[in-house]
Image (cartoon, rainbow, N blue to C red; front, side, top):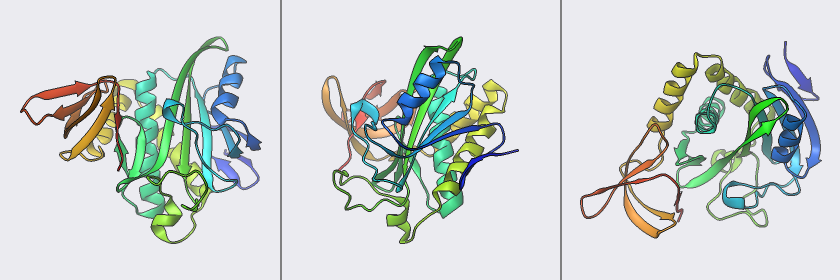
Length: 250
């Protein structure tokens, strides 16, 4: 049995909580988790007045243009595992729905070519009787790239395809793919998600610039490790493993 609100439908096993406008779906999910909201609850909104991405950045998404949703998950996985599962599920859903080949930019963005189409913000908290993880997902679906405040490095599915896409269909697909990982034995799910995350690694074997606490460095992306570190091949022949940082976009 599916759960639905209007034209929005989520697969069996998920519970939908819909609002037309909210401050932040992550804030909604976090508040609900502290009150005991069950796992696999989806908080979906048409617009956010204080949406945010990684590193505290604002998330630009005019009313009804994007997919903006957050999940309460109480599954036996670390936040890193759930971030990976969410990222590859978004990439798989995009490929299935549109035929576009998405890649995952370390550590948690989804890319179409050189531009970002989706971001994931994962937060851990204790409360509601047990620990939970909030996974926020934003996908630029029918977003006009001329929208005020939108970074030049962003894209949308409609901009890439030259036509609009069904946000409802894409939401159901993301949750379906993610649900498949969550249904597996945890060890198998972790490995499967990591293998695909690694396969879809954006700019692998290409020169990139990376910013971290020590400044900006340039190197070639060689790999990612199960612990989540990025492996760079440096110009001097050495390797550098980066646990926290950001790959810079042109």
